[in-house]
Image 1: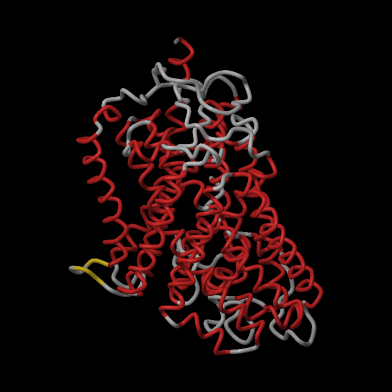
Image 2 (image 1 turned 180 degrees about the horizontal axis):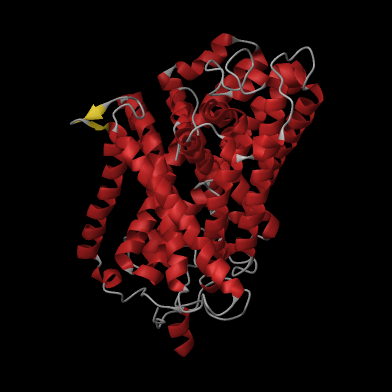
Length: 535
């Protein structure tokens, strides 16, 4: 899903083994034992601790930007039940996070979803899962760059008090050049390693959360005052998802809410560079999820209390302001001086997420290349920085090219690509959840804990996301979904979403012809914990 403004932001309104004879895995596994048939990548181990890993997870989600672009659209779908929908969207993400944690304990490999689904279901399913993650992340990166660019010029206009400066974002040439410069900067920071990454992220994420806390506190303080005639009194029913008026409205809000948590798995893709790689990334993901749901609930409740969820005045569902709520509320709630901090926070949110989103795509490509599922050139790690340098540069180039082409060719295609993104997110998250259940199938009845965390929770999470995937697929068929364009009677969003997945199938067979070893199970094979224990 995109993190863009204008037409791109409007897209958010509808969302949603047999052990091998290989080298032991790099980094600290936490237990001192080699991982389950994993290959060393050469990454810098012990570079990130629990706090740094959790910060990366929060940063990738971009909570402040998600809030400013989705508070209004969610309120428009479900009214005062917006906080309840945030809770409902949190549930499948939490359940899938348990699957990630359990798989990471036994296989702390930076390929995460790709590696784990190969071990559970074999090379073809694993390759497609990896493809879903990579293509989704490239699309997100390109649109994050667009978000950061738009807010850069919006903030510049606020600081200078000049509408002409803010309008520079509408100049296509200026917009593209600025966007490419931000992509290049993010690529350089990611290229230089996790130490540089976490240093930048501490500052940017800290700024976001502090400004968000100030906004929440001031909104609570001003709720019910004469300056805000649309204020609403708090009610516990706001947290009741069954109070939503219709199932259609609930599923629309749920699709949007699920996307608001996407990105926490970046904690896991940095597992080979994390201290205690079998346990710390999973714990960091859960910490990040708790921070996110707490931030979303506090902000949602505070915003509704101060301006309500209606479509008049400053109401969250007002169509004139719903795609960028904080821009409308910054001055009235925080005042002119402090209000500008909200613009800074949104820019910081987009910029921080742009930088950390390079982590999952680069490391997934590195892992796929290491196991010979992609060309060997992408398995190279920089000798000094110990990062997947070639994969990171490739991601930066792909991001810049994709956004430039889409911007020049058609804004409608770009918007529809954003809508299609939710399909791929549900695709690889659900596959990973099911991989956990299947991989640990021999253990789920061993104890109550195993039944819950390795079986029931991942299964329910995967089923919930599969249901969202199926509903999104049906909705996409309608040409009215997205920009309203169609191809041969099918919605262009459906064509793009399904087309990107089918492109992955074509590339998979091309790689199978070029590098058959991976697809023959010679570099990474299916297994279960029981089989590995016997080995």
